[in-house]
Length: 291
Image 1 (cartoon, rainbow, N blue to C red):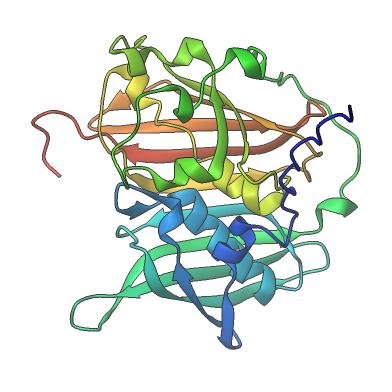
Image 2 (cartoon, rainbow, N blue to C red):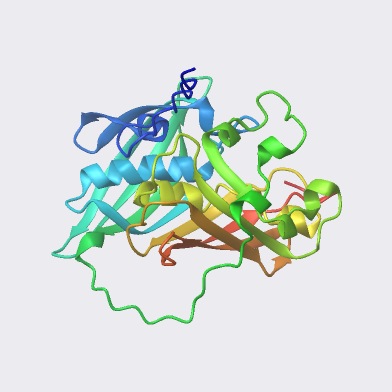
């Protein structure tokens, strides 16, 4: 009797041909002006994820500048972005042989049709492939259990419809030692660690690293604070082009004061290289605190 045919495996998405690439693609209206329809697939509740937005602006600047790879990008989040039409305007600040600097802003429209600025960024771009191989570091990859010992959104209760559309687009496996908040027993330590990738199998590149630093649950959850933790400012450093395979992301908070906290993130690739770092300032919605 012939063996039963195995079920065909779904093809893996590739860089340039994936949902992430399609949803961050912009249409150039004229030099320095780009149109995009922000996808609802990258939302948490109703707000568009800040890392996804940073990738959108990052791609606009890659088109506007003579260099294609983000080295450092700093964003100030001015108002919450919503799914739907948006326009990005870029400006070339300086171009050099190894680095170019530009700024960009993303705008949407209010009920009266007036433009509202959502995000403003300043960034320097270069060529990651031209960097020397010399590495001198005391940094070490985070200690995360094997992926099959970690837990993702699919392992918990079914979420409320529309509460976190972004979770369906990520391969996220959280370190159990940073999951006390999900069991109603937060550790009190501002730590979050996870294996990270895109759910369709697309490998990581510099633009998906901009997403990775802001895609884990907030460290505030493990401090015992629930609810939305909106980003005020986020700075990302891309250190090298990531090797194929899942990423490891570690985020820590050491100080919550005055209703604000910092999140320091490190992203490591499958070759044990530190490929991205970030720091963000976020507002914690404390009980009884004003907006």
